[in-house]
Image (tube, rainbow, N blue to C red; front, side):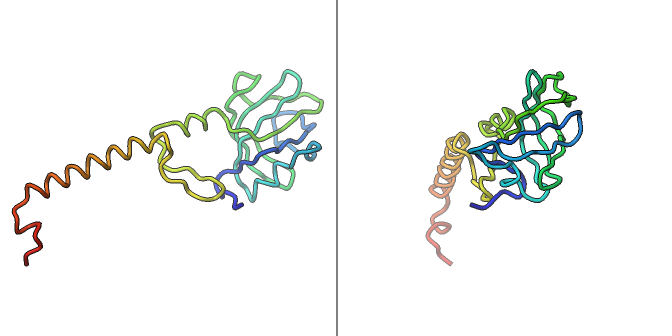
Length: 158
């Protein structure tokens, strides 16, 4: 399947890291039975990540900077009050997960388009009913105008 050029996301991606501090994360490879994050994130795509180690955690968006590295660009939630976590020594798990802010976008009536596997899906289902109602109202108004128009307008007389 094609990948989105805007946002990387993939199923069953789970890796480990021993990175400490608040800088870029270096991934150590996929946990047995899973695939690497960078196998679904290409170029310098941004992607959602979760890092968990002991009582430390961070949820955010990162950008691929190398074959096994990414920067932590936007923190959405963390054990450090929503800021970058200064990770301590030890092994931490890293995976991709759709953050709750994206779930809200998917269910928002303001959502117009969704990129899925590189293709654009027009008008989400939650928005579809509203759009259909608007379409039917516009069509009904058009038919009413047509019915009220003088005969020579709708007969096609030249």
